[in-house]
Length: 390
Image 1 (cartoon, rainbow, N blue to C red):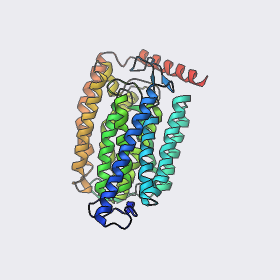
Image 2: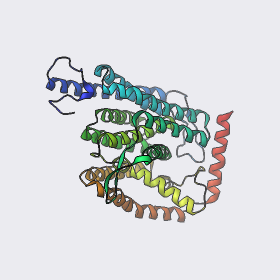
Image 3: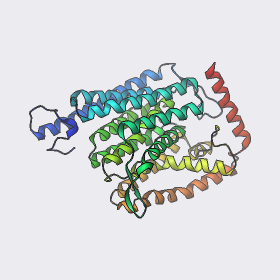
Image 4: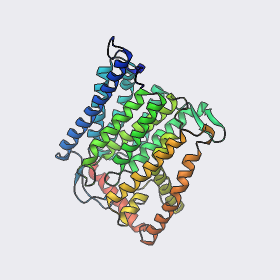
């Protein structure tokens, strides 16, 4: 929002005061909402560390050694909702409140699906169907990504591809973010940094709702982070990773759509490219070796780092640094003509390829690709599933 001109999402804030006071009032409301998100997320996180709700007991695929609650999503989503409510109450029945009333239930549904998975270990088909349903509801309520920057052509309407590509992105990112939540702090720290960048991009593109929604999510994640890093007293769990993954993916679409090309469709994916590259590389090398890409394993690049001796703090620092680098590239891409914005993710993927291959080779030499270890991991996962079903 611009000082001296109240944003339409805050119509009615400040009553009959002049526009300058209205603008300051809107900024104050956002700050109070952010503080509410931080305070409530921290309160819930501390309470959850003392509870026995959704205890995660170590197994052969675990990177932790002490039984730890995996209910962190309760704190993250709870803080985010608290902040949204505070802002909605002060904003009155504005555009922000109407959008929040549609979007918050979708984030809540993603959280509940993740919570059910944490509690009952849902089968993959049901989880996949739930993610597709959420993405479809988002498209119905908010609309799909209408256009995208096509290489050497520029911003181009997607036509009949709009809805399927939007659903594919949301479902794909929800799974990628979930896969990467495996060492202390990695998902929360990188997610918070990327969401903060997304909030800044939304403000730059003129979308107050998405700027506030992503900014509050970043604040909630940062408030949760001390409970998860460097020593984890609370895990995010699927309840957290599904909600945050959906929120990020949906917001990236909303910002690209509402900014009308000011913030391109590549911007959101580029922010989280280290996560997406890790997942893509892992699926590719497993498929090439004839391994089932859907079975339990410990062959993500970040898992190789940990298994080769790098501490959780070290792994998280590496990915946080890479995320910061990709954010810088995403910001630069905003000044590139739409026809050439594809170069930013291509260059970053090329930069990540060489160290990824070297890490994979080190893992191979260290025997971390042994099929026996994978079979043991699958059996352990089946045992956990059976125990949850009892």
